[in-house]
Image (spheres, rainbow, N blue to C red):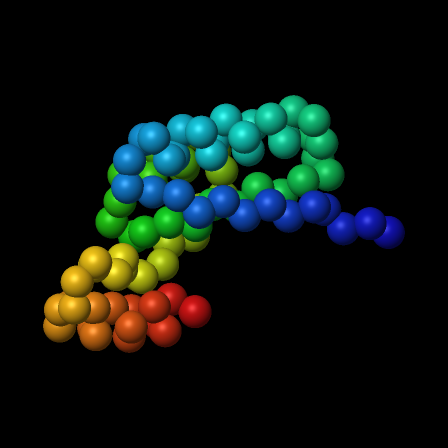
Length: 86
C-alpha cells in the first residue's frame, strides 16, 4: 500500500508569496488527484491564514518570528519563538 505524497508549503507576509504557492498546490492536486496531501504552514497572525483556508487547504500556524538584519534584543527573544515553533 502506497501512502499519499505529502507536500508542505510555507509562505506568508504578502500575496507575492502566498498566491504562487497556492497555484503550485492546485497544479499538484490536478495532476495527482487523491494521491497527494497538501499542507500549508504559516504564521498565526498573517494574512495567509485566511487566504489559504478560503482555498480549502489544510493549514497549520506557528509562532516563529523573523530575524532582523541587525543585532537587537528582539532577535534574542526570537530564538525562543523558533524553539517553540518546533
